[in-house]
Length: 336
Image (cartoon, rainbow, N blue to C red; front, side, top):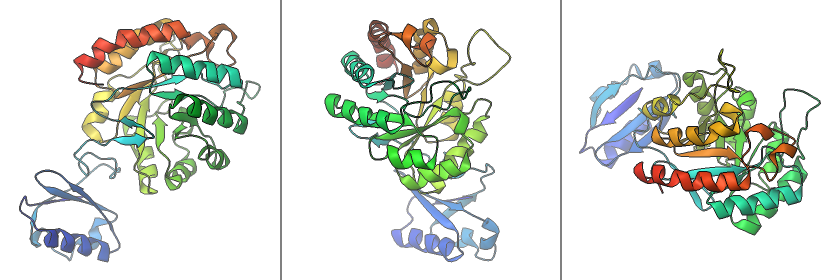
C-alpha cells in the first residue's frame, strides 16, 4: 500500500509514520514530490492493522496497491526515474543509443566499431562477451578477454560500455570492466541472477523475456530493486508470437504501457525484434514516436562475416544514416 501525506505535512510527521512502519518490520520507501510526499509500504501490510495509520498526523489517505511489484510501481514513485551511467543519463527528454556488435569477435572489430558508432552519434557501445546461444555449438563469446577489449574501447572513445552477463561469475568479471550490465531475454526470470545484479549495484538493462507479460517483466525488475539496486532500465526487444515474417514481434505498445505502470526508463531493441536489417530504421523511428527513451542497435563492420546475428546488423554507413534520419524524430519528441 501507499500512504499519501498531506501537502503541509511536517518532516516530523513523515518521520513518525516512517518509524511506525519500520517498527513493524516493514520497509518504507519515501518519494518526495513538489506537492506531496508518498510513503510506500513493502511487506505484509496486515502487520499495521492495529496502528490506525490513517489517523496519524499529516496523513491524507491510504491507497492499496494490488500489483505484486511495489518498488518499480509508478504509484510508489510518481516521478519518472533517470539512470546515470558514466557521463550518460537515460530517461525522459534524453535520447540514448546503444550501438555495437552482437558478439565481440576480436580487438580490431570492437575498436573499429566503437570509433564508427561514436562518430555517428551513439551514446553507448554495446558488445557481447558472454553469449547464451540456442545451440551449444554456436559461438559463445570471448568472455573476460572481450571485456578487456570493451574497457579499452571505452578509454579510447569515452563511450560508456554495456555487455550481457549470464552468471554470478560473469557479473564478478564484468563489474571490473564495464559501466552497465544487461540481463538478456533468456535470463529475465533467472531470479538468482537478478538478485546478484541487484547486490552488485552496477546499472542494469533488463530485456523483456521471449514470451513474458509486462507484469512478469516488471516483477523481474522488482527483484533487482528489492536487492538494493534502483538503477534499472527496461528494454523491449520483441516477443514470440505466431508471426514468422520477423524473428520476433516488436511490441511497441509496451512503451506507453510501461510509462503508465512504472517510473523506470525504457528503450527498444529493433535489431533483435525483427532479425532483418531493413526493418531496423522504420521501427527505430516508431519507437521514438511512441515515447521510448532510446534504442539498442546492432552494428558490425562486415555483417556478412559476423559470428552472431549478421542479418540484422547495420553496416557503419547504414548506422550513420540511421542516426541522421532519427534527428527530426528526436527533436519532435523533445529529446536530445
